[in-house]
Structure formats: structure tokens, C-alpha cells
Image (cartoon, rainbow, N blue to C red):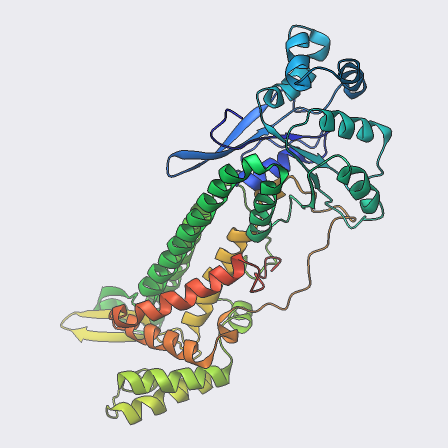
Length: 478
């Protein structure tokens, strides 16, 4: 084969889900997907480029228009060495076969074949014709059972028919495939022809290294969010005359509190945009009933994510003992002393109480002015909630199939979303990891998170890597 990279033609009759498969395998949610049959009339090429180098190319082909005629031509010329190339050469100028030539042209040029079939539908004679004519091309070929529904009564029939003509047959739901399932499919391609194995090995390695880099980018985005949010302060200077009465003081307090809370929300949104960019999502809407679609500072999010009260107490004691903090946050600024013992007691107290206030508001009086300052965040639960939210968002971005944009979410026969109790990841970490995170959070509030950052990075990266390999439930349906 002359090509230096694997080139794979995605084939199948109209509306079998070819474009969705291409979108998911190439992580390209801008692949044109139309649910109407026969909308793809030419071959579209989708190279996967990593570090400026194309490592694999997928070709979205039009559906078969005249499969019986092609098969008859193949059978009539069965002594021809390269049937695909010969067919294209013989019919290139025939308008009757324009779609079929567009479909077979990549195969004539040496591309391998991925046949996509809808495994929820009964196998028909037309399907058997297509399977046989693709067998006769003698190209390396894989068949994908792209069953997007709960209907599986025909799957065994499909497997039996396909296994007789294809080097490999795999189930692959293009609307729900995770990263791990995509990599497994690419690895399975290595078995379709031994000559292709080195090229595909190189392509899979490039995918894996690029994925590891993107996980690192997501971890860096997460750490940046935590550092910014936990050290965030908002100050406002007002003239004394505006706060003489309680109504004036309440108004300033409400305004600065709203600015502080909106700032935290904005930081999260900006981090989410970065996460989507890391994992190449352009078309993606979070349902309003999702834990990710609710307000970051809502009671529902606070209850669903973060640590339990007992875990917070233990983390608070460890973080307090390590830093020797005072209990200023618990006593409205009236320090009762310092030292490791007192710090441990303060951390445990705040953890057990849950720390309802988000941050402390300070008022500094000066001649003719008052300076209102809110922040940094003092609530011990909040950083764990914030971390859980951005990790959940990352997990969804990593494992949300790019071809899902074509899914009919209202279809009663679709594969149902799993019932998942809303929860994050930090609650399931070891006590040691929770304490490490607590130390980082405490230091980040003081602008000194660097000393604990390496341990925090390792913890977050371990979660994301586990999610991407299906070792940890990604909670993708939350």
C-alpha cells in the first residue's frame, strides 16, 4: 500500500450512522450530520492532525446507490486483480454511477473499509449484497454494528453475516462511545491486515500521547481555577455618607456579595470553556436538570458534591494542624490565638458545621470612607464542590461522543441514560488524598499553594486518567 498513513473509508447504506461514526472517531462535532437518508452525495475527507502531522484519515462516503449492479459487475469480472480500481476506471464518466464511483474511489486508491450498519434493524437482502461486494474488494475491512437503540434482537444475525466477510466485527455506539471505546476500536483495526499494523500502531500511539497531554491541560486548568477562586477578593470603597443608615449598609453588602459570587461563577465558566477546547467540543449543551447545568452556588449543588461533614471535619483538622491557622474565620476576625493545636480544633469545627457562609465580609473604616472587602472563600466545603464540578465537567467532555449531536434525545427507543445519584469524585478519595487537597486549598487561600500543588496535580490527574480508561465511573449522564 502506497499511503504512509492509514486511510479508512466509512461505508454503508444511507442513514446508517456513518457521519456520526466519523464525528466521534475524529472528535469533530462539526462533521455535517443530516438525519435524512441519502444526504451525503460525495466523499468528505477528515484527517486527524496531531502536532501538525496527519496520523490517520477517515473518509465519509455517500451511501450505496446501485449495490446489485456493482456486485454483478464484480462477479462478471472476478478474474480482475483489483476490482475496486477497475470498477472506478470503467464507470468514472457514467452519471448513473456517480455516487457509487464517489464511494468506491477511496477504496480504489487503497483505503481500508469500515462498514457501518444499524444493528437495530432487520438485515435485508440489500445488506447482504453490500457485504459481499465489499468482501470482493479484498481490502482490509472492519464492520461496525452501530446500534443506537435498545433493540438487539437482530444483532446475532448481523454478527453471523458480517463475520463471514470482514476481518473484524465490533459493536460501537457512535452517540455514546467513550474515549476508551474509541481507542479499543482503533486498536482492533490493527487486526484487519498485518501490513497495516505498524501504521495503525503509530496512529494509536499518537492518539494516546495527545490524550495524555490534554489530560495535563485539563489538570492545569483545574488548578488555575482553584487558585484563582480560593484567593479571590472583591473590595469597594464608599463614602461614609452612603452607609450611615442600615439600608445603605445592606445595599453595599448585597452589591459586593453579588459581585463576589458572580466573579466565582465567571471563573468557572471560563475554565469550562477551556476544558471544552481541550477536548474539542463546539456543539454541546448541558441539560438544565444536570448537576452541571445548575448554579454553582445553589443548595442542590452544595449538597450533591463535595465531602461529607465527617470527611470535612477530618480534612479541616489536618489542614488546620499543618498550617497553624487561627480561628479568625469562625469568630468574625477576633483572634483567640495561634498554633497547631488551636488550628486543628478550628478546622474540625468548621468542617463539622459545614461552614454555611461563603466568605467573610470585612469593613475598614477611614476618615469619610468605608472599605468593604469580601473574600477569600472561607467555606470549607466550597473548594471540594468547585473541584468536583470542574472534574465532572472534564469527565463529560472526555467521554461525550462528538457524534451525539445527531442523537434523537426524545426517541423512546433510545438507549436510556443511567440513573446516577448526583455525586462528585472527592468523596470517594482516600483520606490521605482528601487531606492533601485540604492542605492545598488552605495554602491557596493565602496565595501559597505551590508547596502542595504537585500532590494535588497527581490526585486530579489520577481521577481523569481513571475516567478516560473507564476505571472510574465518569457520571457522564449527570
